Length: 84
Image (cartoon, rainbow, N blue to C red; front, side, top):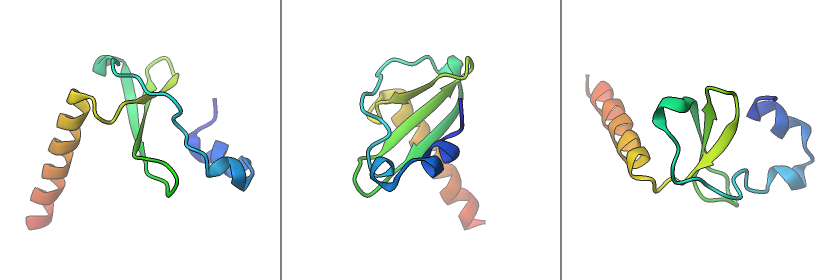
């Protein structure tokens, strides 16, 4: 499985403009997530891609409650570090 950067670089422009996430999952165990990627492209809504510990990539619904809390905490940490 190639990383997202490599897949996008290898596709024709018409495919790059399509949304990466066609379907999203509402239930993904946080313990199974190795890495989160956030994408926002001009033609697509905000997309969250989780790379799981088994190296599978899935799209997570950005409205998922735990993910909203995670994003809120991350934003607050950035704001606090910029104040210093």
